[in-house]
Length: 202
Image 1: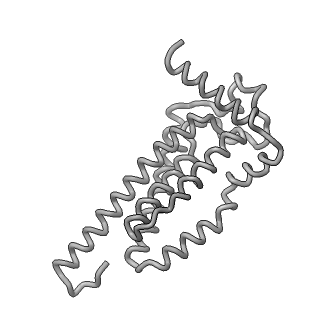
Image 2: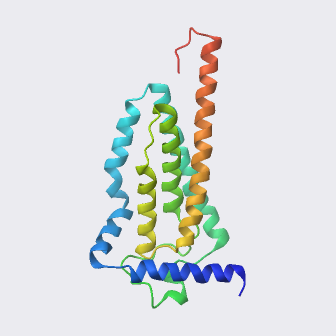
Image 3: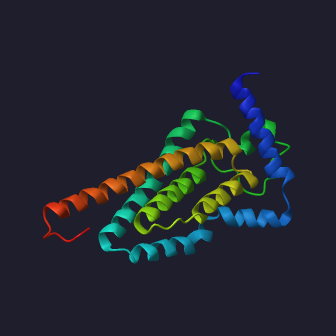
């Protein structure tokens, strides 16, 4: 068996265990809730409020790079990589016809990498390191938030586990790049202030 065939086999075993063997009715409702974008509106409102409490230049940088991070992860995962790898979603995979429970619609045909994973791990990474840089606060719950949403994607049958891993890698890499960009942006503005103290401190 070739290495990638072996990985695919392991992935489908893990998917079956999470999606079917670990399922219960109450978890079905919880996981559907976790992956629903509207569930997290209060969180996004909180992040906007938190950003509003920052000084204006820092807050604008934070918002701009948050939006850029999401745009990059979403476009790269859904419009480039999915059509490059063309890995079928579990519900389209003939090997999974007796496994997938059909608790949610199938959606798009391709699944690697998971856009949910890339988007949420991208935001979690950028927010975590940027917030630590600004406030020296470690918001560890951001990692749990991203992981919970991604686990729900496997549980409801939208993705294989390796789809999540691939999306998470993309998201973490993008989030780190956005954080480094934030650092460089702040440093540039601060150096401009040192050269010309008449400017307002960024």
